View 1: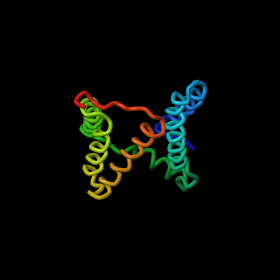
View 2: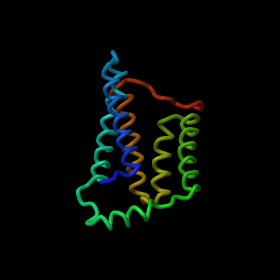
View 3: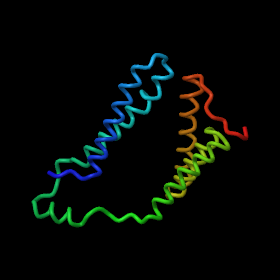
View 4: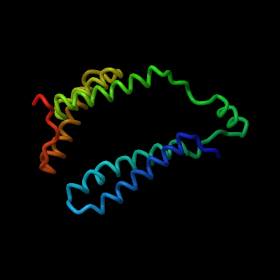
Length: 152
């Protein structure tokens, strides 16, 4: 069985996440450990789920089917799509710099989900829950104030 380049990249990302979890355990204060111990396991778990999907046992039935699938190649993604994604990231960073996290997170999550046709109700609920999670994690649990922006 031959692995795709995306599978190798996924394995690389999982290894980086494992490294950050192990490295964060070596920090002394609890707040310093929490970033790696909060994000790292999530990245590892999601990476393993995706890896299991990519290396599932139900592969092509025959060698001919595998060759045919390989010849088709991966889907072409136009360059404009990459520019759109970069625009979303740059927009989020600028919004965060100007207005702060507590305003930029719900605006970004809602805008992105609504733009990708997730629906109004789902976009609002997801944006609200994401903002609530960030607030509880940083303000309540850690007792830290996150970036409030240059305007506020």
